[in-house]
Image 1 (cartoon, helix red, strand yellow):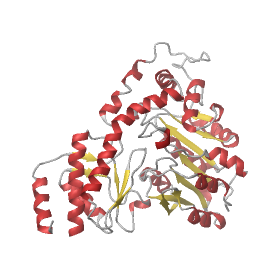
Image 2 (cartoon, one colour; image 1 turned 120 degrees about the vertical axis):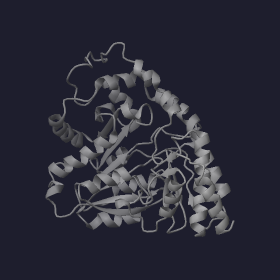
Image 3 (cartoon, one colour; image 1 turned 90 degrees about the vertical axis):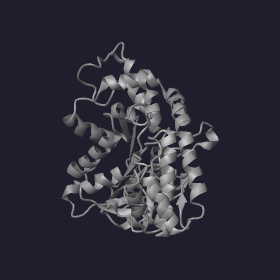
Image 4 (cartoon, one colour; image 1 turned 30 degrees about the vertical axis):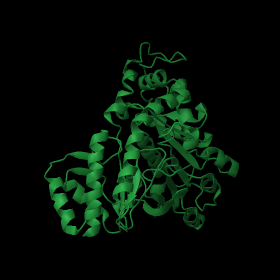
Length: 408
């Protein structure tokens, strides 16, 4: 099509008055309906150890909830600490504790002249917002199909004591959908670091979020805990997970897992901050999901809803963008996003054109620290919320806007 033809088609689309949203990775209404029964799972609010879940106490969670989340965290129940409805809160609080009090006796980060943080890109904007809020210097690390570029990581951490940590989404990363290879996990665990208080923030957000039921079509990731222990660095990691995209995002449960030393320090600090999180919700989740096998069966229902949406994204891109130079996209086997690269210098224009035509996308640049992507090319595609028919309309508009921006 010529530029004039694309402009004419775009004006016709605008005239339709669409109101479609692909801005964030929210579960759709049909996914939320899968967990409606969780609200009726509290006939007897007493935990297996006799704890009255209506009352105070139990700082780190009831035993059966710790067992349930240990499955998602690939850890032992005794290493699990239960949180509230969002793992993001646990991650923020973890950074805040290190900032205010230090890590296992080290100097608190707020007393240091500079703190640097490694940020694999494209990455999760809410991770970056946490470290930006504390004033840390964020350093982009390029991502590939097997995880962060470890040559870059190892070079930065080896001699600079101000580099204190790295954000990681190891399975079905946000937004690329890439999963870390065994080699990447082992290198993260064993690499020499100048800072004794360096920490890997291991966000296991999509650990059970496969799109396909066959094991051979699912990504598997080496456990960071086992790798760190084998390398002689047992305290280097903190693992996080939640049921936000398993049951109800507004009323899920979350947890973190850590080494005994990290856990002892966390309990002491959190014991001042809280008496205990929502035990009724913990119990509700255990009775609804039961165990790891129950989680896996429940997630197959999610996959049945999401799989056609992701396959539609790939179909529309393959059909509509094959003749647009410098367009690339990922084809994840799980998670909640597809990472799309449009021609350099076009991402902001594409997002603006889509918005004007009634389709809201994640802001261009959001997948980079400070919202600043040097090439202006990456857009995070979140296909989960719209019904399939609306998603198809939104993708048609997106493809048109990419072609128009490229032609301009």
